[in-house]
Image (cartoon, rainbow, N blue to C red; front, side):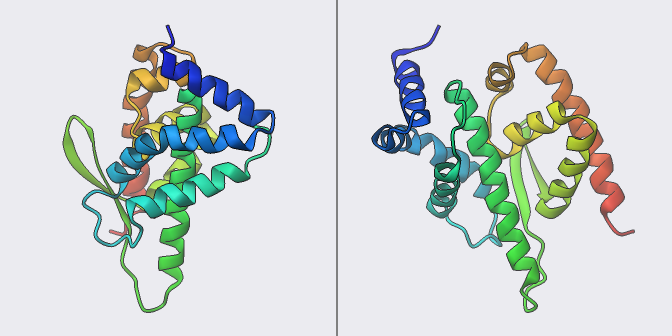
Length: 189
């Protein structure tokens, strides 16, 4: 059952889809705190990314605003798309850093999603592996994207994907194993 806040968000999403710019702006005001949390999780412990939490949120919001006529379903759908946009912002940032001839540092994603353990993943390798996974199994790639880049729980992902948490958990486990192997194959040596 949707809470009052969820109903307000759904109403704002619908109004934005219909062209109401004030509703769009209010939606971002309402969800700004959650977007900052996602951003903070992505950037926590990463010293080589020159983006701040606010920078990542602001760039994500700018990209979301440019989307035209999205058929927003609910808050979970919006947050899943925000996670995808954050991934793109981070990948674009990493690519810009990679093209800077003076810096050849890897940009990594630090996450504590897997059993509370800290995991460091090279962002460019993860992106390449996700592109490959997307070609093989788009649904599993979407689970990884929402989990790593959006910080969504398995239950929230199940809600977005209109499936059971156990189905998402199986997909998450299989995807993690596949990604580890794919990223290992990309690593030299």
